[in-house]
Structures are given as structure tokens and as C-alpha cells.
Length: 429
Ligand code: SF4
Ligand SMILES: [Zn+2]
Figure 1: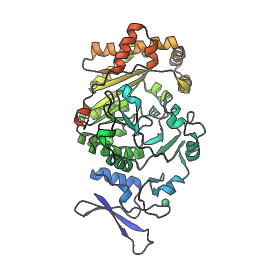
Figure 2 (figure 1 turned 180 degrees about the vertical axis):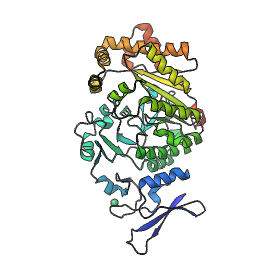
Figure 3 (figure 1 turned 90 degrees about the vertical axis):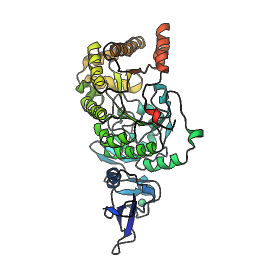
Figure 4 (figure 1 turned 30 degrees about the vertical axis):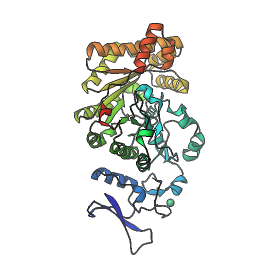
């Protein structure tokens, strides 16, 4: 599948009609003069193929130059060459400022192999519209050290405080992933650790299905990775991810898809994850994946200190109903400025009991007790009542250091485990 462009004899030199053409040279769709990025990506989805938009004779809507490498789009979807895209001002919509992301990074090595999640990550955007209060991303160098760029592109004054209000897309990532993979010598260059297993995760620093534009970038990247036989993990809070079930099924076990559900208390989740879809909508997406036979996982993270045995049992029973390969579990970690934001959000939402518990675990000793208790409780309930539900705990290194000697050994063992997911067996590693 490729695009064919034909000059409009009555227009300027850049006035071209764009057609989608199949392998036999037949026009399968007329896309008009200036198809938007959205229309082009949707055509890819509809025809189950990927177009390399770098070499299709498309022109920039702003300057009329032909697009030959990096590109992006305006919020209205019109294609822009990189020079024009880079000089666009951010546009505000409903409190969210969007723009294009100038970063050159395609694939980054990741330490998330320590959590048995992946060896690499691809972030389809900078920023995240969900704006979860406990999110650690804005305190990482990927955001923290780029405050100048964020100020310029999206008027961000404080990347941490404004988290959830800015989103910069990487529209041409599928093309760049394609190129990057073609130039990779997998035997020599590809990192494959015991716990990361050469998996690429989308995304650790944003939600890769948070909206249609992000989802389109994600789909293109996943297709490229699967074609190169690379195992992929998708983690998203957005039920949007079910739009790509066809792709996940075609990947034949190479893609594992999961969502984070810290609790089924919708209003508490809403207080801490103000713009993310409610937990039951996430569970319904898992259920669809289950019924479609797509490998799936749950991230039960972070569990709030007010959760007791009954609430944990109830959450696990929902998870067991969709038979995931694994449930990752992590207690809350009172670190950095995010913690104060969580405290404030729970107070404002009227969850004084949660706020009090959060204040209590600010004390290191209290936190250690709560975190170890939750890790053990989740494992114990799963073992006693949900046989077949595999829990993979994520004990923090600081927690292990603070634990008593026999607990330290046990937690360390848990930390060293590899998740039981089978998906990598199908891949090239
Ligand atoms: S969805 Fe993930 S990346 Fe986005 S704000 Fe929430 S925790 Fe952070
Ligand atoms: Zn241009």
C-alpha cells in the first residue's frame, strides 16, 4: 500500500491530489488534496498496512515543501514539515496545551527490567493528559531537565505543578522506529536482560492510548516492532486500547496489553487520577482483551494505605475474572512533591481518612510497615482464594533496606523474580 500524488493542473505546483494505491496499482481511496494526518493514519488502520509518510510525495500545509523526513501536524491534523512544525505555537484546548515534541529519541534503554516490565521504552508523547497526582514522570530528567523546551512549546512554568496540562506529540515516531530497527544489528546491539527479556514498552512516561492522536502513533510503532519480531508491552489507563485488538491478535502472543487499576473506588481514583477513565472502564477493556484472547496483565498500583483485606480481595476477584497472565503489585511510595499533591487531592475530595493514612506513612517506619504488610497481604489473599492468579510484587529497594533480616531476604527474592508471562517465547529472543 502506498500513496500516489497527482498535480492539480489548475492549481499551484503544490496542489496535488492524493490517492491510496494497493500493491497492484489500483486506487483504493481518494484522499483529496491535503489529507490530514488523522485521515492518513486511519487509512493505514482500515487497510491494515503502514505507509511510510516520509516518501509519499506529501506536502507541508504551511510552506508547501515536500515532506521527506521528520514531520508533524497541527492540532487540526494538517501535515507540517519539520521546520514549520518546530516553529508552531502551542494550542490550548480545554486547559490542555498541545504541540509537537522536538525530541530526537526513538527508543530508550530502561531500568524497568528491575520490575520485569521491559528493556526498552518508547514514549509517544511528552506530558500526559491524565495528570495523576502520584505520577513520578514529571520529576524524572526526561521532564525535569527540559523545562526550557516545555516553556517555549507549551507555556509550561513548572513541569511538575503543570503536569496534566501539556502534551507534545511525536507524530512521526512510527517512521523513525522503522528506520531505527532497519539499522539495528540485533545480535550485537539489542539488550536482553533476564527480567526485561528484550521487551519494548509503550509507554512509561505517558499514556500511549490517551487520545486518538497518541493511539495512532502507538499503533504505527507496535506494528513496526511486531514486524521485527520484538516483544511489546502496552500499559495504558485508556479503554481506547481496544481499538487495536485486531493488531494485538495478529501479533500472535508477541504483544501483552495491560492497564493500571489501583482500586475500584471510582471517586477516590478520580481524585488522584483526575483526567483518567474510571477503573471499571479499564476493567471492561481488560475483559474485551480476555474475550479476544490477547495476552493481558494488570498493574495493581499503587494500593492506598486505607485498603483492607476485604477491599483487596474484591479487587483481586475482579482481576481473576479476566484471567491475566500476571498482576503486578506495588504499594504507595511517599516520595517527592507528588506525595504532597496526593495529600492535597485526597483532602480536597473529602477523603480525610485516606489523607490521614497518607500523612501517617510519611514517617519512614510507618511506611515500611504498611508497604510490607500490603505486599504480603496481596500475595496471601491471591494464594488462598484465587489459585492461578500470579502476583508479581514490586518491593522498592528502600523498603528492602529497611526490612528486618528475614523479610529482607524474602523481598529481595521477590524483586529478583521474572514475571511469568509467556509472550516472549514467540519473539526473536
Ligand atoms: S497515566 Fe501514567 S504517565 Fe500519565 S499521569 Fe498517570 S501515571 Fe503519569
Ligand atoms: Zn513547511
